[in-house]
Image (tube, rainbow, N blue to C red; front, top):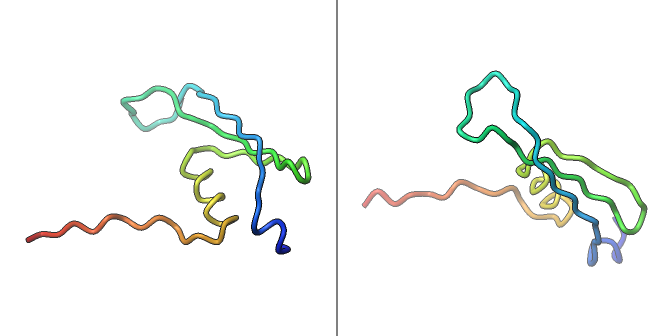
Length: 74
């Protein structure tokens, strides 16, 4: 990734909900899907979950994955 791209990223974000027809029971019958389209290249990436989207954005910005919050047992 060159200097210009690492300092500035531009995407068109699309979000939509789809019915969850999976085997596992879920309180929410719908799940969110996402896609990003690069304003620089026109390349489109799709994501099966919002967590996948955030992981991709963390990777693109050089951020480490989110870490679970440590609870203080005192």
